[in-house]
Length: 196
Image (cartoon, rainbow, N blue to C red; front, side, top):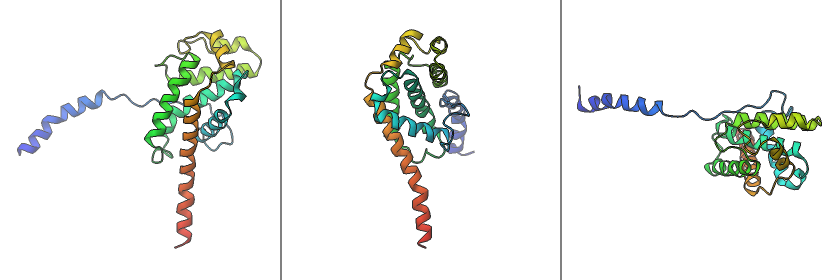
């Protein structure tokens, strides 16, 4: 056995130990009936969020719309970097911007920094559905989880009066631009095929 091969064999346990400590990436899903007609949930969430945060004044006094918009952003932050259609086109700056924006909106809303995305999404969408049905008590109950550290009443009040979220608006726009680049690739490839 060569010295090189022996060294590789001795390093295998170290490699396996290092791999055992790797945390799998966070995942999140949206309800199956959410954003019907959007093509796929990631695309729908990106377009909805970028449209909403391009005009943030429309969220003032609209806690249901704010809950939906923030649920979209929470989902995008987790799903977009792992989306098999987007991974090639998503640049590192967009991913960093999404993470910075997540800290911004979580701080504004009173969401625990380490709260799992799925719990935040589920709480926000349940609150949005309850508010849309004019059931504020049920909306508060949806937000009565450890993820929402301000408590249900304060969280609902914050949703009704979101402060400016410039990092979030920028992240939503960058995500949309990434999606636009993804859409352009097949178009470019098909036009090249026609000119052959």
